[in-house]
Image 1 (cartoon, helix red, strand yellow):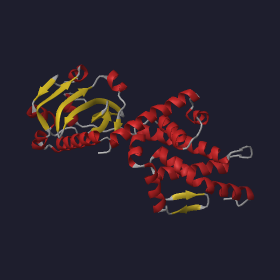
Image 2 (image 1 turned 180 degrees about the horizontal axis):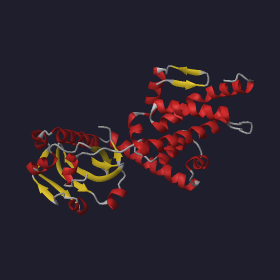
Image 3 (image 1 turned 90 degrees about the vertical axis):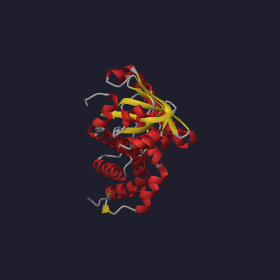
Image 4 (image 1 turned 30 degrees about the horizontal axis):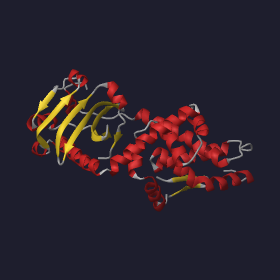
Length: 305
């Protein structure tokens, strides 16, 4: 690299901004390695750009990192396909089925810094951020976590300020829903029961499924699910356990409609939601929802298993 006074000045100022830029990128991308890549790309763009007219270098760099992170999110999403399996398809009856880069070279990452980044955002928030669309995630992170005005974020996401405000608002509702799912004692118990039920289903543990089902349990399916081949109704633990036994391998634990259940997704889109009703330690009812219009109205938050 050229050791001219300009390059030295840029390197000095960039290093001062590095911790903040890396924090922004990490919260947007959820990966320390990807955050390092985004920050290094920002340095390369800075070193190639004419910044003589830039009055606020910190803001300029934050915008650049935001754009890079948004491109990385979109690229990541285009490559991601949620897997699904015949076991879950049977439930609805259908057969269809690092190192840190810097201006002066590379050096080993600081483990303490990695831990600080992870602790500062928390696993639960990282998980819910991963369910957001790229533009929603960026708008929420830049505005709610770093205080960037919507007018600046709008330029990054190529939306109007009003539309950008709506992106952040939708993301905020999901984050609040996630907080409720994590902290409510009733939700916590429901989550434990549903998680155990899904684990028993995937493992083919028929006896364990029976123990978690109420004697009067009922499984119901909406018209869209029955059109896919699911029975309109099943009664009793034997029939319900048999339906789930050995399946649900690609069902994702999720919070929606004020409770905890499971969702089957295909290519990132919800296909069937399983609403669980839990009383105490047993499942008293399961509703299969496959109606597209209804699924679109659900605020779905995918929970870590």
